[in-house]
Length: 150
Image (cartoon, rainbow, N blue to C red; front, side):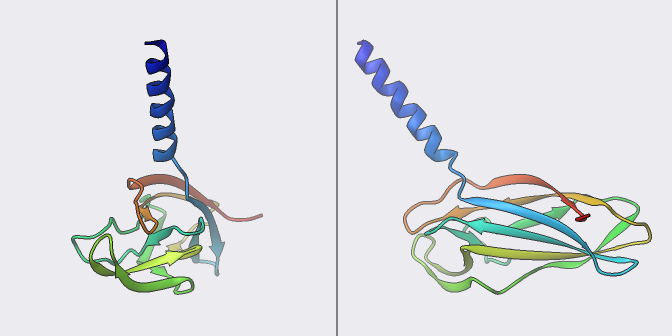
């Protein structure tokens, strides 16, 4: 009986460890363009053999990447978040049975901001989903603080 409990305990922690696997690491930066313009650069570093999905996907597939900037009265978000095209692939995804745009190795997103005041940081969140060729990890939300480099 003791061996059965030990086996199930090890199996449970192995499963939980796999479910918590981090295959995407995010880096953020706030760049001052001029007196009133900034841009937030969000870069996803993606492990080999994994993919991060675009913001622009049809319904019925994976969860698209969603970037939200915390609203504040002293700045405004200008337009939609741009996706840089490097490392993007548009292909048939066998798991979802549809053509999808996704990123491998690295994905960069840029959001423009206008402000009458000097900014030192902006906060927000990113919701994203990652898959490899045979499985997907659950959607994840991370919170970020993009700071101006000194």
